[in-house]
Length: 330
Image (cartoon, rainbow, N blue to C red; front, side, top):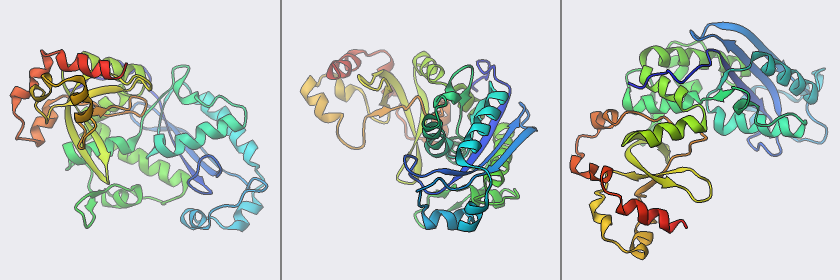
């Protein structure tokens, strides 16, 4: 079990945006929903706002249908987009320091938040500075779907992959949900968070520990081997890996996939190794340490993958392959 000793922040901000489309460069936030909760996920404060449309911006009709937003609603709002963002920035500052969370927030809501703050001359990296951290509840749900599938109820699609959309899992887990309303999504996300914090404690604590890039790297480099997961073609897949080196440009941790026997790579030349590591499936897995990866104890992998040949853990004492891979990036 991963302890939560490194997490000193005891308050969380759960937030969600409804937007005019999916392009964070051109579309805009039209509705904000956010709540401040304590370490028991009990609500302390809330914020809900809806703004008018920015001049010259044409919303995607499909997005408005999903958001249940009519052109009349956008026209009637007395709150300008800038005024809404100004109030949002003020409230988030009042709530800080905190861990900022959402459902798919790092890949969607956070992108809108950063670019919107930048355009309105506020600090775009607010959620990662001055003691603030960030997590993504969707990452936790995906990990739970493979390591603890009994915790969050879900259905599967015709390919056998879990359907983990918030509007799909909320009713299955007896959560009242006003779907595609910013505050409605926030309240449902908080209920999912409560389930995870109580019934998937290892996953919850791992996510909190991984809420900053520095903590992710410290965890990865201090563990001889560990379990991680990736979302690939609609399915979450577990990997047992060991840290090798950092990416020469992006500095992301590069880890060896121990489903492959490392001994097969020890006597390869640099050219042979360069060709081999480019093949699919990749033997070198990239951990995007700035996207709140779930890093688990290796025993979680062994619980669900029984065919692992433990002799493959020889990578822990062999360093030749590590040196070769590092040289490839130089």
